[in-house]
Image (cartoon, helix red, strand yellow):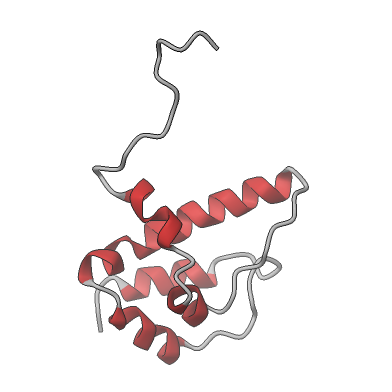
Length: 102
């Protein structure tokens, strides 16, 4: 087993049950996990944590927030991809320059 899988799997199961699909298949998730490149596998748990923070924030603002699918689909459908840059050490900073007047 890959050393990055268990921490991701445990983090996925720790998502509150009212925010995720209840049916989960560890073997199917592992198969999808192993299709990812090593760098992505190492960052997947951080991507999940960033996604959970974003969805929790959205729920608190009373906005429509989709549930997390089963972990296998989370990987196969690439739902983590939008967070890959933000968890990378060399991530581009998307913010206003300090000199902007507004």
